[in-house]
Image (cartoon, rainbow, N blue to C red; front, side, top):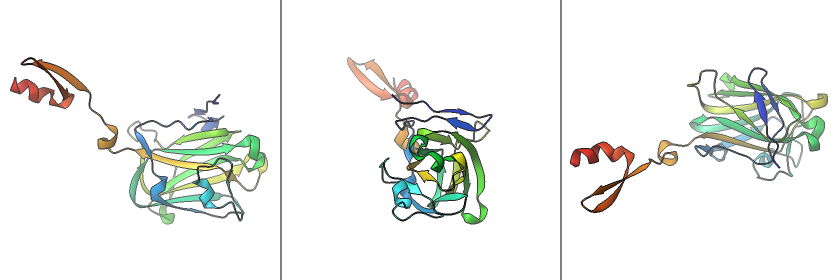
Length: 203
């Protein structure tokens, strides 16, 4: 049974996690279009483990905090959600507790867009990139950086088992117009609702 994750916007805390990754149908995974890099890693636990779809493997940092994951795109993209798989039960002091998500054109002008605190997470946790303004549902950026600022139990290095990055689908992919059935000249005709006014004018 999946454990629901919950977030308090006032406190910026995310508790728990989810066994399964649940994402809205109007979002698509964007990480496959990016170049990924990390600030450090242990041999055998490199950046590729963040994207291998295997929850048994993990990226492990090897250096001073903050530990950084850099996601760079060749063109500006709209990003709305970051999903991480972390497991306090398995990784204990390697589990991040404070995370900063930053966006910008490159390393020179990154700005924080979201800061969250994880409370003993186990499973998938989702970090929305929506702003305080309801109209700001995504960030438009060349680069996203995920910074692990601190760990549970004052741990030094970090384990992250998977990361997915999502943005809104183009309208032509995500929107399927409702249809209407019209009886005319003894035949039922099926139309997208956008055709309603045109059809009304013809009949």
